[in-house]
Length: 251
Image 1 (tube, helix red, strand yellow):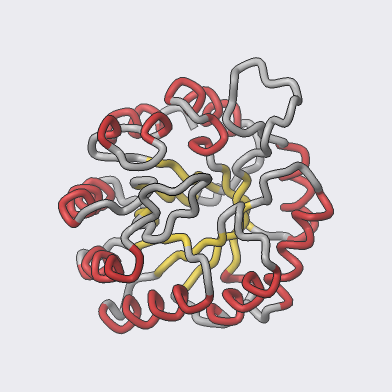
Image 2 (cartoon, one colour):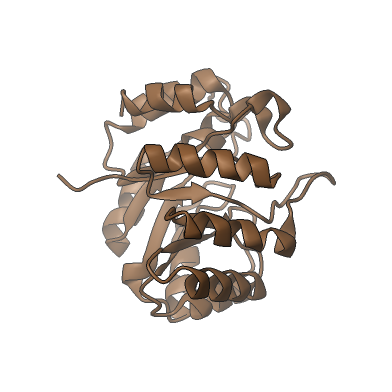
């Protein structure tokens, strides 16, 4: 059976001590990629990440032998991260992702172009916030049109905004497993599931992780924080590393 890809770590990189701790915990568990997200799109003004000054944290994580991962907003973010990390650590991989809110197809294509055929860089794209098979297909088609090697591309399902749809558990976003299956089969790409942004609470994350394991996902993206109570973003949906270990037992 193919090993599932696990991407785990804080919602946002907040400090050097937080990332050092997270990198040590990730390395203990042989996590595929550690979240060290430097740019955070926000619904309203607030902490929106460390930005470029945090690239040194990605480099430090890479030098520890841990593969770093971060969301990028524009092509120059991707260029700077790739250059810094690949130069500093010649054996690690880096994962970049295009988030659900980044729906400018020019930007999608350009970020894909930056990644191109670089064997040590993977790009993950998340679905848009609203449910639409056609639009989700379009995102992937735009990224492929940008010239990325399909072997470097992952897709992530993070649910869709409820918008009045049945939501008995009060999920932050509602999963559509059937749509994810259709996308995966059509493009023949690895499909990951994000129970953190889908669930929105610890209880829901654990429920969704178990539920989604019955479907054909190739891995998970999970938010894990050294101390979720003081997290600057999405505190309610970040697990402790102990809770993360419990989650791994049910998937």
